Amino acid sequence: MSQDNLIKFECSQCKRVGHYSKKNKKIIKTRLELKKYCKFCKKHTLHKETK
Ligand SMILES: [Zn+2]
Image (cartoon, rainbow, N blue to C red; front, side):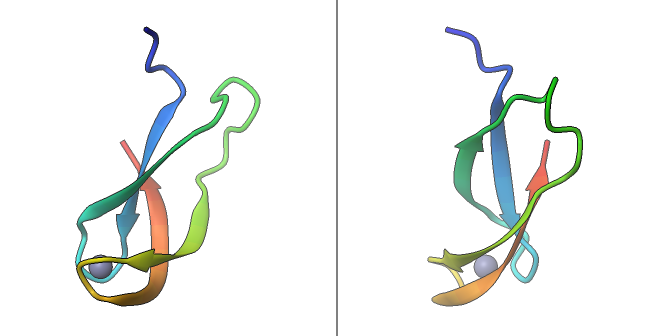
């Protein structure tokens, strides 16, 4: 199993990783930012792609 395309989304408020996603890093080089529900903050926050 290759995890090359596995990316994590870190909550910008509590800095915990609550979401995982996949993208093709060879095609998409920009860092993704998404509004997602954080189960730690219990609200929607901005999630940033992290390593
Ligand atoms: Zn959070």
